[in-house]
Every structure is written in structure tokens, then in C-alpha cells.
Length: 401
Image (spheres, rainbow, N blue to C red):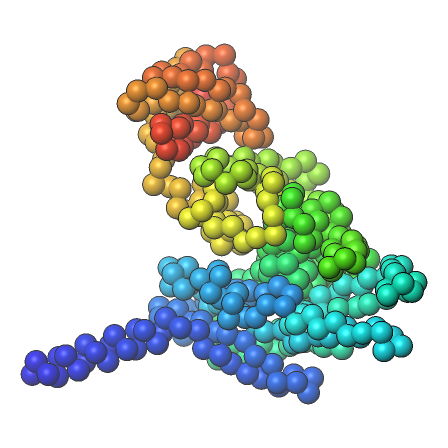
């Protein structure tokens, strides 16, 4: 009997371990064998429609590397989402007249066109290039979605795309050309491609643009890139222009609601969300601006926010005004009285540095205190409190008289 119980337990453990790994799938599209990683949470049941989230890797990267970097297993298990990591096809750019070949690695046909004069080996040359133009990636991704819909009960209103770098550009292309089947996208350090910027999207899509202002791979202002000693070359719209592209199409409010995230980590970064609301068909567009941020995927363990958490909250429309990443919630404070009229008390020992921010992200108070904060001079409204004592703590404060 004990042996039977042990065998069953061992089998359960093995099944659980297997369930914790993505499964590689293949399909043939446009004459090519294409690959993608699929992770289905153990809680999936055909009786309940599941959201699906596509995650697109950057240029030269691979689906497995993107899966390991984002590490979505706990997220998928907690939320019940099916996660898909497709693989791009290798691309080699060949200069004319046998001047040279440049292997670029796996690259999405994301609608990027470059047309610029360059000097190569002392000779003038006009760079006229499209990234991996002969590969039908949009068709492959749509076919992958259709394959998932045949195998699983997919929530048609919860089809999401996110991507990093070139994968972000590809996410924009998918939204522009296939927004009739995509609810939302999130593009991290990837923008609306140059060949896409003149097109009109087929439908309203919720769009989250995430970009660092110090990105040296895809520049924040102009989406310029360099390759070794060559460049910079413009490959699309800048981060703010990409946001405006979608805001204007969706007819969202022209004035953004600005949300400042608490500065909880010594990472030299600050994060702010600019949300444009009330678009056609309840669409939303947002820019998550990373001040001093580079070409990275930031997480809540080392940074003030966690990208995957914020993407989930945007996709599900659960962003609050003063967003705090899931990993920061353990540092929330309960201040009193709240609502307050004249002062608030902060439960701390000793002296602490405090900052108070309004809804637009402006700092309205900065002082050192031993627990009592005078707020009598502030107008009625909602505020966000950041306390360093010695670690960071946070609280929402309502001032009402």
C-alpha cells in the first residue's frame, strides 16, 4: 500500500513538473516550418474560455530566451492565461554588388523600411532595406491563433500581444492589420514601424507603449537605430509619436491622466504612466515612460514596477491612479485619519523622509517628519504618499474638508 501511494505521489510530481514547462509546437505556413512555445496553465478547463497572450522576442533573439527572461509560469498559473512565444525566422541582409552579407538572426517582418545614404568601404551607397520582407509573419501569427482556437476554448475578447524591441514593432503591425481579432497590445522598446505609420488600423485596439528615455538601441524620441559604426537610421515613429498615432485613431482624450509610480528602488529610474482614455469603442492608449530607462525589460524584483504586472493591469483595465507593482504591495501603509483634513499620522519609528504627490504626478510636499504631516494647505483630492523609513512604504491619502 505504501509503495502504491509512493508511486502515485511520484507520478503526480512528474506530471506537475512537466506541466511547468512550455511545449514546442510547429506548423507549416507559407512553405516554411514555423515554431512556437505554448504554455497552458494547469487550471485550464475547456468549460471556461481562457485569455491568450502572445509574447514576441526581439531581433536576433529566440522564443525560449524570451520565455526564460519573462518567466511567465507563475503569472499564467495565477491568472489562468495561455501564453504563446512564437519564433521568428532568420534574416540575412545582402548588400548589392556582392559587397557583403549581414546575418541579423531571427527577425520579424514588422513593417520596417530604411532608406538612407551611407558610406561603405569608402563608397557612397543608398541603404534601401526592409526587414525580412519575404516572410509572412502576420499570417503565421494569425494561423497560430487559429490553431489555438481549434485546440482550446479561447476567449475571443481577450486576445493580447506584447513584444520587446522588434517584437514590439511586430505587435504594432499586428494591431494595425489585425485589430479586428486583437483586444490589446503592449510594445516594450518597439514602436510603429516606418512602413506602418502611413496605414490606417482596421479597428480600435487598446495600446500600451513602454519606452525608456535613455534607450540607445531604439531611441525614445525618433525610433532611430544604429548597427555598429553605421547609423543612426530612423525605423519608425518615436515613443510619443507612436502613442499619438493610436490616440488620434482611437479618438481618445487629448489630455492624458498622468500617474507617477513611487520610487522604491535605487535603480536611477522613475516610471510614469500617461493614459489617454474614452476612445471609440471604449478604447484606451497609454505611454509608460521610463525616465533614464534603457533597452531593457524591467521587473519588480529589481525595479519600481514589474512590466508583466503593468501589462496585465492595462490589458484587463485594472490600472489605478497611483499604480503599485504587485511586489511593492507588501510595503503599503495604513495612515490615519484617512480621509484627512488638517494632518495625517504615519505609523513609523523615528524620523522619515516623506513625499506627497497629486494625481498628475506633481510633488506637492517633501519633508522629514516623525510621524505627523500637515496637509491643511492642500486642496481636496486624492494623493499618494511615499515614505522612506528606512525602506520605501506607500499609502493613498484622501484630503477632504
